[in-house]
Image 1 (cartoon, rainbow, N blue to C red):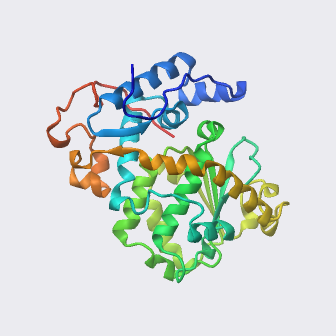
Image 2: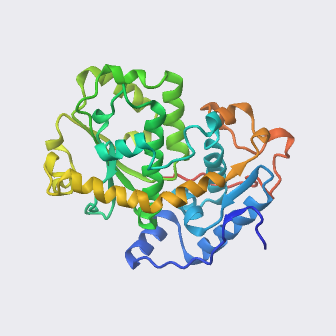
Image 3: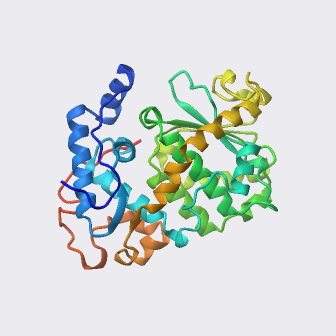
Length: 334
């Protein structure tokens, strides 16, 4: 089948990762060679026939991150992909597009070490995303800068198939964060970002560690935890000091009890980000027909996440050529 909507070619995928990763993929994500080949074909055919999709990447690496995070449930992966595409156009694409690491403010945030991946993997082979929100100067950077740098870093880490399969660990140090940071987003924006982030970001969040959090922000943190699912909430660990963090200390920057100086870690991470830059910018060519979605979905409202996309703009609810047709068992997804 010729895919006229393909931004990237529909490649013939071969699993070239280790036997250990093959085992994890099969046991935890329901991924086998036959199931993968079938699922990729189904997603490509669905995207080509979906009238709401204008252009989308059809390379295996892109599609597999959605299949893996949804444990190879094809309808859930379809839903995730379409909402992911739609999210890019919320607020006219001012935040979720043009994710260019060379833009001055974003480059500076990366230089400051606001967010970067630690170079070594943990004992379970997972990468650790390290957060230092205290370096985010409210007088210099905007909330859009914050969202964009997160987008750049998450897209970069997910470009690696091993990270798609093993999942990601998050660790943050709250030093320097005060009540003034609560003004970055309105309550509605905070809710939408949190809910959409958990539902739409194709990332397996394995552990979340927070350290040195200002006691004045206790209520804000507790409120934030209510916005995420119970499953994810049970993976959150908070510590008074980073010395107590339940992560191998040698993985951390030297300034936080590790071995390698943070400046070296940031340099290595910026090289990874730069290597993924052209791919990320090319993703801006993906597109959907916005007029075919309900207003709530176009705005990124939380309520829209509770309904599938089949009923949009007069399209028939159970048209299997584009929608989430049929009955499927409800999967618990990482």
